[in-house]
Amino acid sequence: MNIILNKLFDYINLNKGEEDKNKVLEDVKSNISFRGSNLWILACAIVVASVGLNVNSTAVIIGAMLISPLMGPIVGAGFSLGIYDFDLLKKSLKNLLVATLVGLLVSAFYFYLSPFKEVQPELLSRTSPNIYDILIAFFGGIVGAVATTRVDKGNPIPGVAIATALMPPLCTAGYGLALGNFKFFFGAMYLYSINCVFICISTFFIVKFLKYPIKKLLDQRHQKIVKNSITVLITLLVLPSIYFANQLFKEKKYQHQIDVFMETEFTNKGIAILYKKTKFNVSPKKLELGFLTKKFSDKEIKALNEKLKAYDINNTKLIVMQDTTDLKSDILNEIKYNKSVLSEKDISILKLKKEIADNKYPTKLLLSEIKILFPEVQNISIANHSFNEGTDSLKTVPILIYKSQVELNSASRAKLLSWLEQRLMKKNLEIFSEPIQKTVTNPKAKKKK
Image (cartoon, rainbow, N blue to C red; front, side, top):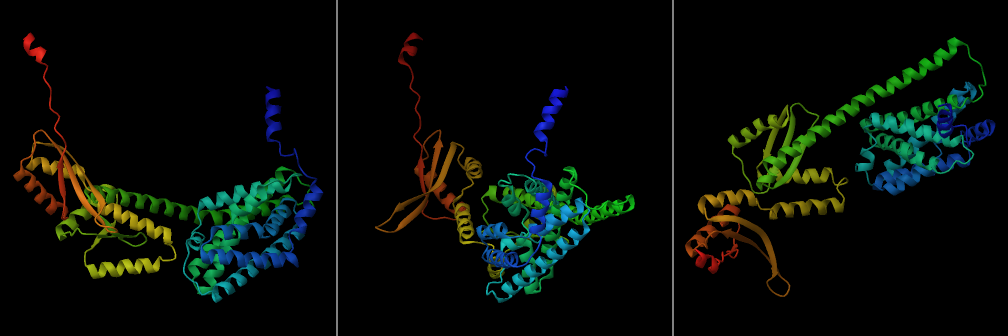
């Protein structure tokens, strides 16, 4: 048993491959200061990150994360707490403050001068941190601290810089500052604070675990003050993030229920939805829908509002946009508001979805209705068929193929065609019958009888 435990301990032993502790501390101290080249690198990284956020380029933002020297003073603060070197802690926090102020000023100056001030998705994603960001910062910080203490540092450091993402939230805060949008500013600064604090705390734990030599011995009282300060800081950052995570979970669940409701009540019945907007942060919540051709009566809208509760969509009012002018205005406003969010590819996808919705026929529902009028019909298949009408023109015609026990006569076919044109509100439909399988009797069987 001891042999197995020793082997297991050997696998998880962090002391294997560890760099000399004094050399590690020297490296950490050398990366704390923001003077000369470090300050120039920081300023350039801020501009690169700001441009990436401004044009919504993930690749550019990742590049800025990799060249950013912001990790230096944060790791330095974690090491100084672990060895109780409060002079080093003051130096680390001072340099982190300088770096933060430089980051805010440079990014705010850039966004103030930039002609493009639309809100991009990359900016939006840095304004609502939650508990998952804490987990990323903490475990990313552990990886960074372990890699810092290795002889062979390997690839983890660049990965930690990307995962913990210090530069983008700082530049997003600068964007909020430039535009006077304090919701963006405080949201981004909260995420930046989470990353800084939890990278620092995870580094502190690794330093303690590896038993780095303590510079200054503290009595029990001062050690307790340090531990209590860390606990209070963690609590202050964790509690709001749990609230935001819970809100995110509720919103995702709500949106899922909305999707189920729309698919069941409209899409599966062949009713194409042209416009959708949800307002989650109002009371009551609002679901606004606009339809391509379908018009609803007040009675139908009231019935749909009642049905919302059956889908676990509570405290929500369904608003059907039926006035063409208002609907067009709302769609244009929505596109204008989100034009930075919708890329050309997204717009193409929306167009394709609309095309599919236009060409999708409720086959199952049509069959059940046709069977009432023509009981002999067993099955149907309906789809659009496109063919060249001339040299460069394309014509699309809906074609219905039906299978029946007996062939429909000309009067029945005309009646079916007329009903189908009214039902689908389409002209120039064509109807074909599937060949009837004739049963061949065995003449020998008759003779035998």
